[in-house]
Amino acid sequence: MRTFLESAWFLPVFGLMLLLHFELGYRLALRQKTSPLYRGRPIESAIIGLLSLLLGFTFNQAGQSYRERLLLVHEESDTVSQAYRVSELLPKAERKALRALLVEYLEAKSGDLGDREAVGLHGRIFAHVLDIHHQGLVSEQVGLALLQSVNRMISLHFRGVYSRQERVPIAVMALLVMGSWSISVMVGFASGVNERRSWVIPLVFFFLITCTLATIRDLDDPYGGWIRVDFSNLQDLLQILQRMRA
Image (cartoon, rainbow, N blue to C red; front, side):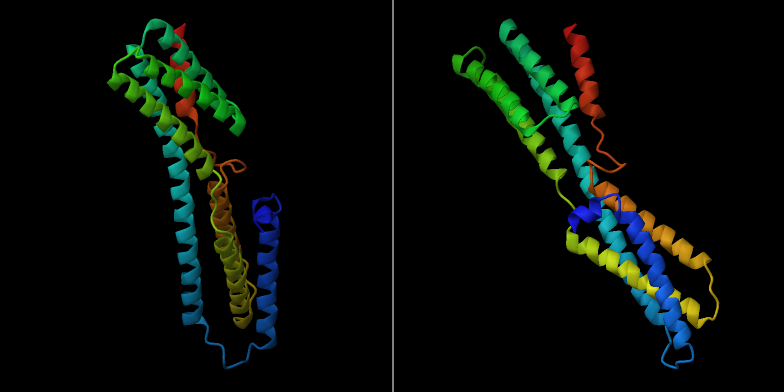
């Protein structure tokens, strides 16, 4: 289910099913249009309101996840900057080596940094800072400040990785899909009861529902969607540090 929701076929199939469910509702209404049981209006409003509430809740959740991913990028950039500034207190050789490692790390982050490469870079940076601290080349306060900055940088990297793997629960997305199709049947049924096939309201409904689900899916998929997490903060920091080293 998750693979299908993230595939390129999801939106075309979803839109086609909306049309088919509208047609189903329309034909059902034609068969029982004289039924005195149909009252519709208050019930339709309540069900559509429930779907709107679910859509709004899911949209807000996806938007919050996107903002959290973006915030983690900014926090990681700030932490790398802090480690770079604190390195000014190191002896020249150690300062140069640490800054080279930080620049290398940012260069890797600007590309496709895999988990194994990230662990390797983190280990080299942490080992270098730990060695400086153990050798007593700096004061206890400076050594602890460097260790805390590097620890936070590593923590933020993996928090960012896991946050980009999180998705809206499948059950919620399935509920939205099934609810949208159910509402489509109701819209078609209402058109059939009124004995006129109007395409204005169904098309507006199809457009809004499809675009909303497409946006939720994009916000929820930072790797494959159009709405990607912006890493320009780290890239700008890399350019600044490279100019300072030149």
